[in-house]
Image (cartoon, rainbow, N blue to C red; front, top):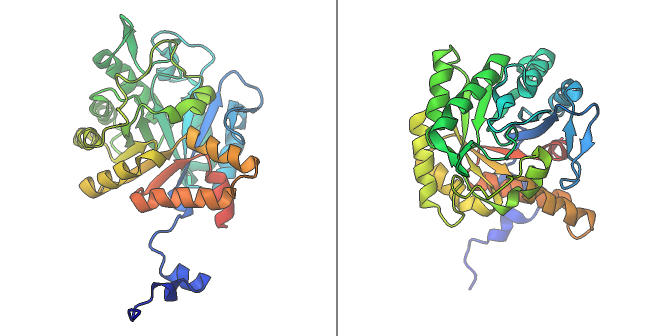
Length: 323
């Protein structure tokens, strides 16, 4: 005999399904990544990321206005400088590409768009690693001072939030200290707290021109096999002053997102990274999948896992679908 409770009753119509839906993807969840190239005069398509572009500084105001018009609340900025060197000097140049971009956006749209900046050296070093190199090894402690200077230059330009992505030990504390010492006590730190040494970053390295010239990043990014370690990394970043913690990538690490959210209850971000994006785009263009349904399902899974906000290259498309 059937039980009196039939689960299909609440699935019969779209309205009924909507009324009992447990998780919803909202416009307010979205953060759109922007690549700004100091060498360009006009936008250039990123071949490995269909539908994405490197922008010149001259187009950043229009980009900000488009995001605001779509209702997307935040953007994270990545810079590609005209010149690179072994110590990533342009990363912490107060007149560098990111401080200029921040100032342009804030002058155009003010507080209508939350401006987040990536804090790392990899886009600015000629060797493509996230810190200073000695004997072919990334040096942790000497790198912290440069990351702190980079974060400060972004805050001085008007950034609402800085997001250290380098995975050096102690960098959140170094950044929080320099920001507080210079009066930027309200500048938020969104830490890439559990960032894995993932194969899903390939298209991003093309987009940001940040492929390591030698070796890999496995000595500072996390082993994909570990999840207990992620909780240790997140706990340290919270102790050092992180306001928001991030798990990157998202799709293969939904279990980590869930563990982080349940353990700490902190505002938690997930980065729907370039490789995840490109696989969907290529399959959709081949006609193998329904792009809108797949994207919404993937991003909803990140919300269901515990993400409060999602960094995603799909943000503009999602904003239009949600209208």
